[in-house]
Length: 205
View (cartoon, rainbow, N blue to C red):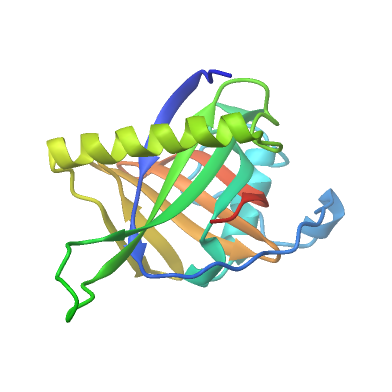
């Protein structure tokens, strides 16, 4: 099955190991009483899903890197279409910087990437074996393109988030953990373009 992937975001950070998160629901009442998420946003509907994920992010904490290892399904919401979900798949892999032979193991980086697809919004919630192989090929091709372009991929801890500078200039992803979810902001030159959350681990290495 071929996917209408509309964007591929490439990030990386340091070594991590696999761990599962519990999948559970979050009702609207869970957000009751929390501070409204309006700073740095131009919102027309304070109760939009985009804004509620922003609330989750503002209450979130720095994630443990080992929790992220694997593939995670979720949803993203644009700032201009705040209640319309986009299918999202966050996947991670370990990348060694070089082969240093039998004496020196070399530095191992932990790369995280994001696939977004237009429809349906639950596209990545269930992934078949054929789809896994297709995604692996996408990852392989992307890795080769990065080597050719020599794109700088930088991730650091900042203000309680994992913050990644993407291959495109001024495009960043800030990631936090809220309860049993990973929540993220996609930012372009200080403007939050999309808010995302990831709730289901669909593949383990």
